[in-house]
Length: 367
Ligand SMILES: Cc1cc2nc3c(=O)[nH]c(=O)nc-3n(C[C@H](O)[C@H](O)[C@H](O)COP(=O)(O)OP(=O)(O)OC[C@H]3O[C@@H](n4cnc5c(N)ncnc54)[C@H](O)[C@@H]3O)c2cc1C
Image 1: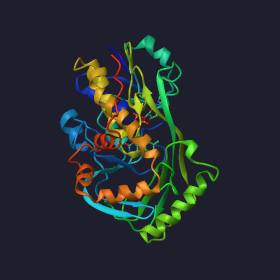
Image 2: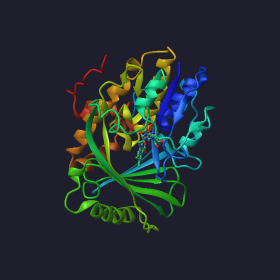
Image 3: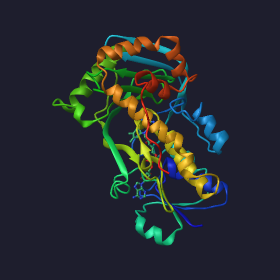
């Protein structure tokens, strides 16, 4: 068996780690000169958005032998809506980084493989098919591969805007804003890197919500709100980052012959709210397990398929909320049941979907 992996990101590296543990050493092609993002952005890894696991870090180590060393635990969650505010304490998940310097998770994953990565390599998928018995497409660019051949069902395009700011922050606190005046149909967030630096951003799920004022208008309003709510003056550099028009969707046939579409090429519904990394890592593990005769990719990924559809339902309902609904939700967070769901005693996504749309039915994964 000769395996090629295109893309040394989360899914590609997790596939490589799993294959190597069982004696298969793939060829890995990466277009950049190093693994990890070219920019600094704060990331979260929620522990209980997926029905697949409780604690993500523990699960990846114990079930799959993949070690993740997060930056910090998220022990406090503060949410602001237009008129309400709530803070709750618990174990919500982790802050992680994915830049090209330590403690980036991509670098951590790279350290767990022996195979040297072919950097600066833009390979042609068609050529690889001639040379390799199996190809794993892990580029996070579904539009380049699966969409071209009509396999990717595109859902929406989202936009993320952020700045890395200075101030005084609680290292273990995640702050979020649910307010259509600052992030229509989306959310604002503050993720600390340490007690002095943080990532402040807004995520808006679709272009159509941005309106005439453009993103800059929302950004300015958000900055003012964040400083007022947190009673702090930030030091804000000029540099603003944007990840625009990231396609979200699902690959209808994630395996064609001996080609597997993994990571964001498999599916992405809620990557920006902390459900991307984990499910994408798992698709890499599952593709490798299929090659190793440890299960079938289509079966192993069924729970991810379900999570994807729950995510779409939750996001669509979320988009219908106005600020009064958000005020109501923030009040609801203080109630015990919701608090339990968020702190990990229930599966949050499943609960949200059932509460807001009890009649939701989900299409079946492909055979
Ligand atoms: C700004 C931003 C913030 C995010 N925040 C979060 C978060 O807080 N929590 C969360 O869970 N998820 C988050 N996500 C989503 C998360 O990044 C993805 O879920 C995850 O990275 C997808 O894993 P992947 O393996 O599919 O792709 P990636 O990890 O993106 O890796 C793809 C790799 O393929 C390489 N590549 C691309 N094209 C080619 C080619 N033609 N040939 C060779 N190599 C190629 C790329 O350079 C890259 O290294 C965020 C995404 C973005 C953009």
